[in-house]
Length: 428
Image (cartoon, rainbow, N blue to C red; front, side, top):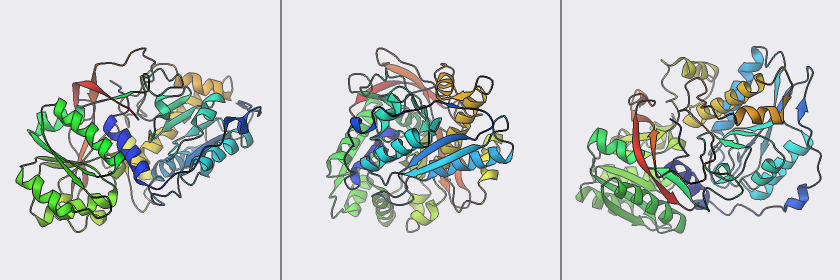
């Protein structure tokens, strides 16, 4: 069954945003009013799509490029095989620089000047142009929910789905909801009982840590909270304390560099845990390099998400992705999700070839209310508009564990690793 974007994933990405530097201001809506936005691309002309990425952002040049690269790889292979009904897909890329101003400029250029049929695999640090995309009726397909836009506006379809009304206000009255399935999994499957949550003494980090703590307590965990100084973090002291207090699991509300330092500190004090749990953004092939100084902690890394492990090449859909991206220097779960987003657009466009590939037709496919899996790459994704948030929900998750020499190893099948869990509210 499909589910809303997991709180732990969406807010982890929001945390990355807030731990970075300031992201710029927004251009007023009036700057984009009264623009012509034709919706049809017909004949034999290429079908034009746009990809907005914070490729050069305050948090690092490669932090957000995975979905873009995966989507582009899909379209390259699609075009090599004849495109959509003989028409190429022409990809227009735009780097918004990680700022609201840059994002609005990208939206303006792609929608009003390039006249794209859709946006695909949007990965924006500050999606300031989201309301403009929605107002223009341009479907935005398979974007990463770094902020609340995909739970706020119609015509925006994030990679994990949404049950929110999407009437211009985030979620339900400004509150979003996420489940406790990650915590339930480690408790029920691996017998974990005590969890540590490590955060900075910084507002965004502390807020995310409170959300994780709330979910853990709802699942009956004893929770150990560790807060370190943002400027001069003493991860060794935190690691020693969580060891002394018998933590089975470690969750964190710190950045990638902080994670590496925390793992090294855990190795230094001989802290052994069932799992050091990370999220989909860190589900990459560069783990051995990123955590080179902490072999014990590195081999206790677990990742959870809503898409099939990119290492699971026994699956034909994953194998196709890996075959098409074998020239990549590294692989990541975000690349696979970008590939899935591009496939989602292609399936929508194929449904429109008889009447014409238009924004409205593609949007109708996205809105048809049927679960979508991208050939089994995603847990079933749906978009509904529920008047009230669900109190509980059957939620499934994809789980993988890092093992040196093997990479990420899938732990069970994501379509059967499911739990009926409460939905907890939070403010984005």
